[in-house]
Image 1 (cartoon, rainbow, N blue to C red):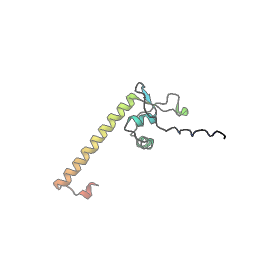
Image 2 (cartoon, rainbow, N blue to C red; image 1 turned 180 degrees about the vertical axis):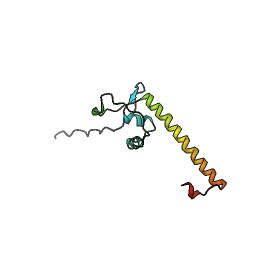
Image 3 (cartoon, rainbow, N blue to C red; image 1 turned 60 degrees about the vertical axis):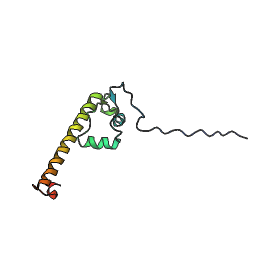
Image 4 (cartoon, rainbow, N blue to C red; image 1 turned 180 degrees about the horizontal axis):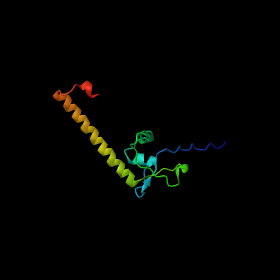
Length: 110
């Protein structure tokens, strides 16, 4: 009886790495996303388009397509996002208190 010569199916590589080495000082966009809550690359590019992304490095020039994010840029980005979240929460609380006190109507705050 002939042997099964069919090769096993190849595993398709994921676009995001399983884990990021901790000793590295800069990261690809996929690694950055994984390190920051597992956000999608789509979310990353949306934030970048809105001016909310981290600083990027292109060590071999723009034509190479290689984009890295340094550990320092990641830290600065996290601080920026935390500050922005606090500001948004403060505005939300101020609006809610204004509606509760009767200073304005909820429809005016939208």
